[in-house]
Image (cartoon, rainbow over all chains, first blue to last red; front, side, top):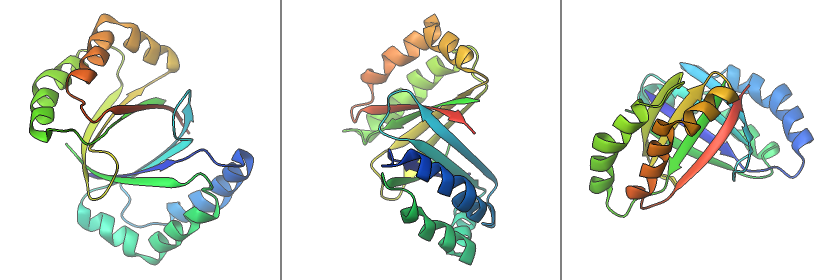
Length: 95
Length: 95
């Protein structure tokens, strides 16, 4: 499997982040095709990140199809609208 | 669930990292109690990290029991022996 990990930096306004994330971003992400599994989590304790979102795909082809779809592009384009602390995207091949 | 994400920075000697990781570190980690799920992956493409390892626990109590166990301490103590690019540990609460 292939995993996309989105590591969100600490936002300027956590309440505004949460509002946009829950009500706009997650519904957009839920429309993406080919996603085998999705997991969102909120960081606890000391760390350089505020939230993690991970998406698993069965193959790199599925990942590319998802990211290239209208829904994938809408999801990606939405990130700068709320991720005021930045977002580090890491793609990895699961062992 | 609670997730521990270990983000390994790019090592000085990837072959030496892989050898130690596969033959020493993963066997140590496999002995840790209370781990509900484990996933290791290798980063592909441009990113500030080289590998990701994630461990899921049913609760924060399970996480603390795992990290406090002899096996958890041996696993943690092993990280500096091969992670020449550093390791960022992020603990998060799954939504």
